[in-house]
Amino acid sequence: MGFFIRRLSFYLIALLFAITLNFVLPRAMPGDPVTMMFANAAVQVTPERIAAMKQLLGFVDGPIYEQYFVYLKGILTWDLGISIQTYPQTVNDVMAGAVGWSLFLAGTAVILAFCLGSTLGIFAAWKRGSKYDAFISPGMMVVQAVPPVVVAMIVLYTFAIGLRWFPSTYAYTAGTSPDWTSWEFIKDVLYHAVLPLFCATIIQIGGFLINMRNNMINLLNEDYITMAKGKGLSENRVVFKYAARNAMLPSVTALSMALGMAIGGQLIIEMIFNYPGLGTVLLNAINARDYQVLQGQLLIMTLFMLFFNFMADILIVALDPRLRKGGK
Image 1 (cartoon, rainbow, N blue to C red):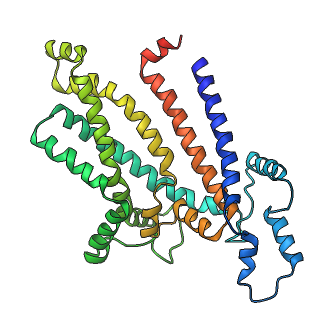
Image 2 (image 1 turned 30 degrees about the horizontal axis):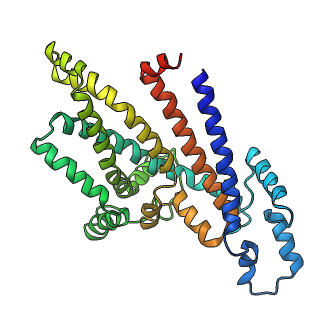
Image 3 (image 1 turned 120 degrees about the vertical axis):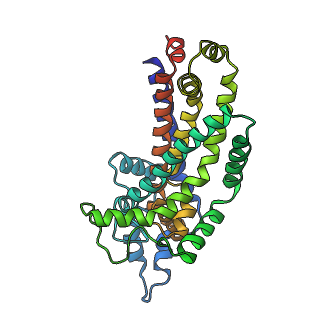
């Protein structure tokens, strides 16, 4: 319980710091978003109307600390304001329309990359020096070193434009009304997700593979592994029950960080495939100086990152009895 309280306190402080930084950074950007919104207006906009719009969107003149406390109140009540770019739509509506797609794409890709990469890394360590290890480990690192934009463009050109096996854009067929109770719509969503999901997965496998391989190699020389082999235990039991279980602990941290960053880490892939996720929302908000959406997006990314790191701390303690004994 003491460990739990200390870690929770740390993450609450980190959240407050991130919220403060989230408040300061957009306001340090040049340009007045409300003035920019009216810059291309076809009619003359009076100062009174601009002032009224600023009041509506939360950009009121006043001491910075007053604006900060209004911002904190909005976070506590989850009232993130009104989007400048898509006025009169609220930030909550903008986020709600995109967060599900990002969670599906990025979350599925991270889980698949973790499972595949960890499994390949286990066998690469156990077969260290073999032809399999000599091919799979460098091969996956080469793929990881290629910029995501290059991977996505190659996949898009080959399978969508060249072979025409899969669609090249959006999350479902244009003109289709979303209906999650319809199996036909679900199949359409999965069909459109094949290429972006493949790209988002393949670029992450190498990191998990090398991480697991290195952890396994360090553990295979331990005395308890030698003892397990000497007792005549099967190869599968030695690899998975003794070595892989302990080698998995550092990978849990890597998985949590990947999940935390996944919510906004697929910007390039979402742009190339025109996928309606939070990465695209973030880019549009930056270009439009949409402070409200920008703050909401960064807040969600921060919450995801801190939550998954906190869960990783708790999970590692649950998996490793030595940490539980050390905390008593």
